[in-house]
Structures are given as C-alpha cells and as structure tokens.
Image (tube, rainbow, N blue to C red; front, side, top):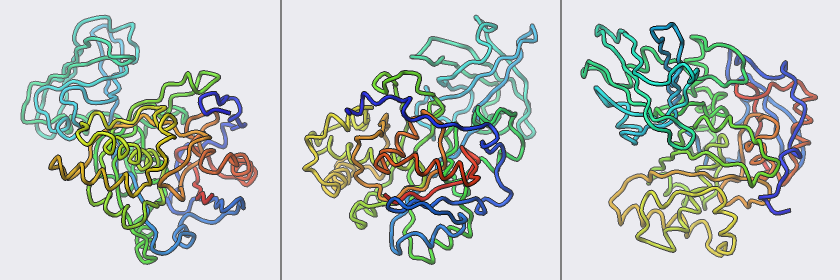
Length: 406
C-alpha cells in the first residue's frame, strides 16, 4: 500500500490509563529496557543499555531543553487566560529570542480565548530583585496559532529570565495532572542545553551520568543535534488516511563536527529518540537539495512532509555523497552549523538512510511516532507492544524504554 494511504486505525492498541506512567522512577536508569533484536524480544534494565550496543558505534542525542512555555494572566474580570508559547516570531531565532529585553513576539496557543477578545493582558512579577509589568497583546492569526506581542518595562531583564521566573513547564496533556516542582528536573534530560522545546525528547530521560560514562568506556562515540520539539508532537492523527494529516514543522541545528563524525561512521548511527531520528534522516534529503542546487538557501533546505517519498527516484545518491554535499555547502556559505527545519513524516514504506538502531519510549496508539517505529521494524511493531503490555512495561513520556535493532 502507498504510504499516503495508510489507515491510522491499523495502528491502534489498547492502552489502559493505569499503564501510562504519571511520574518517573526515582532512579532514571532503573527503568525497564525492552530489547528487540532481529525479531526477537527480551528485556533488561536501562542501565545495561551500553552492553547491547556495538563497540565503536556512533550514538546521537537531541540536546534541546524544555522551556517553561505556559504563561498565565488574569483579566480584571478575574478570567484566567493561558498563553502557550509555540515558536518565536520576532526575533524568529531561538537564541536571540531568549536574550531579548523589553519586547518580543511569539506564535502561541491561547487557552480561554473567548474571554480575550481584545485588549492587553498584564501581570506584575518579580525577577531577582527587579519588579516589572509584563504585557501581552494578541495580533493576527498565523495558520492555527496566534501572534502575541510581549512587552515589559525593565530592559535589564531578558525574556529567558521572565520565563524562568513565572513560566510553567508544559508536561504532556495525557498525564492528566498539574505540573509539579519536581518536573522541572525530571522532565529534562541530563544533557539538555539548548532552550526551545515545549516537550521533552523523552527517550533521553532514562540516561544518567553513569550510563553516559559506561557508553564512553565501551567506546561509543557520542554526538548531539538540536531539534526543538513542538506541541505538534502530541497532535493526534484525526484523519483515516495519513495523507490528510499535516505534520508540524520543527527547527533543527546540526554542527559541522556532527556531519564529519557521521561520515567517519559511514553515515550509520544509533538514534536516541524519534526527534534524533527525524533530524538525522532529514539531513539526507537536505544533502540531495544541495546536490541539485548548490546555491540553495538555508530556508529552502526545509524538508516537507512527503518530500522523501517523491524523491525515491534519486536513491542512487548514497548518504556519504549527501552529507559531503552539506559539508561543502556549509564551507561555501561560511557557516559552522546548519540551521533549518523539517516536517518529515516517517511511516511504513519509508527507507531509513542513516539510523541503524533506535532507543525510544512506548508511544500513543494511532500516533505518527508509532508509524515511525513501525517503519523502522518493518511492520513488526505489534510483537513489541504486545510484549510490553503483557510484561508490565510503563508507557509514554515517563514510562520505560526500548532498544530496537531491526
């Protein structure tokens, strides 16, 4: 069947609420690890992950950091309005955005929108020893998001400091609970660095400094990419055919040394999480674009949802050629890192180019992440999920993990 006409109802399974982990384990690396290797399923503890990996392999992590993206305002009527930051609008660059002082704009979701028809919302807050007033004004719609201008009357304070002071961490909606202080630590990976996500790359939540050290001792080469996870990661597939589902755009950054490391490993990698998968696989198609047009702009490197399937006739280009082309493009443009975006959907019928092993959690029924896993294990996802359900594995963001070796 053509990928576009996959029926999402074929990717359903029963997930009782009690199987969804509401909180993480006290020790991250003591979670269970399902090991799927060439069709065989077994289990271990996550702290033993390095023993299941080939010595000298390349492992790629997503180093994005979850921001405290929920802001709450009270109108004079008492109505509570929630403004959920989705992506920076002005400035559009994440790094510049968090350094802004005095004003900035975001694309947002708005909770209780019917109570905020017009006017400016205000709240007074304290950041360190400074007291300031933060104002929010809603402008035009951009697709399904609201453009919101923020202004504050103290240019000594950055927007990052405001979020740290009064923002709330956006834990997944399916946890059905309020954010707790502990989530600020447990819903971040131990290697998170680059602020910008509104959801954690949850496969990485199991890693501890001890596990990372064990990887190093086994000779596993570690590299990091950045993909800022958007709220769209929780967007359910509501159409019967996935052709009618629009994937969300996510922003990526890959440094030159990572591309060089990929080449040294014959463009083969172990991906930690589906976000690392989407970043790595998108690099191949970006390389194809450079090969077709060496003068392509950073924005034009964007990988659209169905592009990989339309480009199947170009598979005579191998990964080394595609990644080498990206490296030359960086040199020609005087850049040390690639900044672009991807909308890639990976579903059965997709041929993986770079990712050879995958560390990932257990995903929601009828989700694009489950489609990605199915594509990776050549359709054998049910044997994995049946085992996890019958062997007391914990599911979703704070749940257990799996190592998939097709």
